[in-house]
Image 1 (cartoon, rainbow, N blue to C red):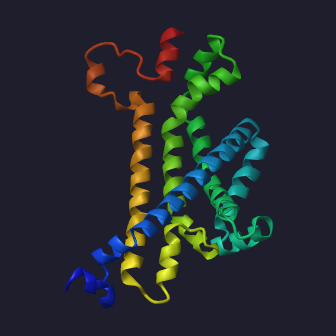
Image 2 (image 1 turned 180 degrees about the vertical axis):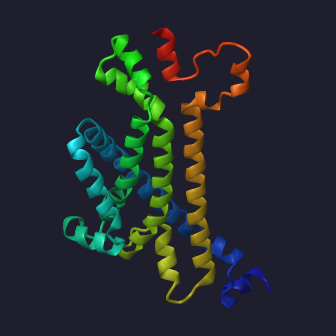
Image 3 (image 1 turned 30 degrees about the vertical axis):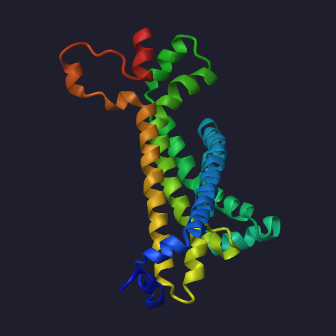
Length: 244
């Protein structure tokens, strides 16, 4: 069957659909990426001070973790309905909902990363005169990066999937195409939009993994290299201990 006939036959794979609707697919993908990126960035900016608050004041840890967990359990349709009076049918409605959903993952991973920092690294830094701010930015955060980046990757992939739900207000990126195609069961559109959504999640995860490897070069040091001679400092903690 020719590619021109695959639309009439409603095939799952149709080259003619890709050619005739290419701009529509590009626009939906750009919207999907934009909503996802903005939601994750804002989520990280909100989660970071919440995690610091929970860590520095244990009495706040329970309420912060409990609230973020509670938000994650709210169904997306209910969440958007609750936010509708504040934001109307706008992209802000979807972004706010996605930010709230990302908090439970990001806050927990940031706290876990900071708690995994060896106490001897902190003590060595304090002995060298590091104040709380410098200790956080130059010692604790670099060592917490693996856990933080793991949470960021999970939150990003989750947000890519949840963005499709924004189609209920016309701000769902590729989800808009899926919702539009379902009533008539337009197979090519459903499959193409779904595959693009999966590809976005995979590409985002791989990009963040690459960023993580660039920011944490000491995690790639092979143990065999250090077994033959005294190991040189390979990370922030080792550097602090070596100087101390």
